[in-house]
Image 1 (cartoon, rainbow, N blue to C red):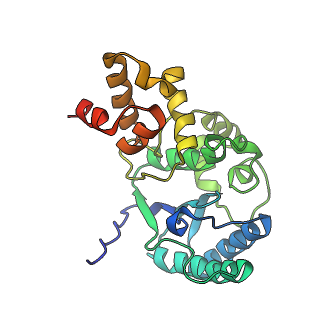
Image 2: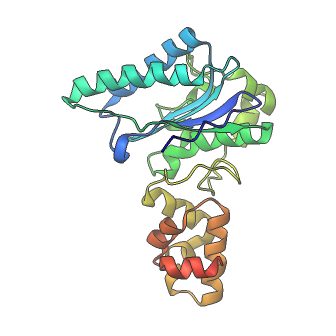
Length: 250
């Protein structure tokens, strides 16, 4: 069956998520992460794409890019093919490293752009690693003053009124499973990450939903769906059956 055509952005902005095949690791150590960032830097120079945010996680990467010249596919091919060759050689692996095609979503408003940047930077905190400002392998530190040849920070900083505005906007508020309501990004969070967000949304009810009365249970399920969770993941992290979740949403 032919793959669906990539949805093209009218604005030129995209949220892109390359992910490991079968959710396998794509980074073993900091040397691997440094190589990936170097390839991002070279790809930007080669292709002419702006990179407004990035975050390297264990089995996937988040990128917020501006593709003025319709070169996103070439940009991603440059990075993923070269990195896959490097990584396969490092670990003695054959076969692919990244899922194909890579996932991407158009960003069509200033609000969505800012929300996507904040969401990308919030990934390490959602995973229980460290606050966004302390994570070495995202662009958050670039926005806080780290010298960079990778991240184009000017657009977002101008929109937020400078570094102080960025800090205020980026305060912990990671309470959705997607960058913004209506985003099509799904099934990229581990259950541990999803549970952290569910607890932020519902409090301790988020981990005890199966024990709650039907009214509280139904309200919690609806709230999580509205915040971008899939029904199977809600069932796994709350203990409420898939059938009961779907019955609530009828």
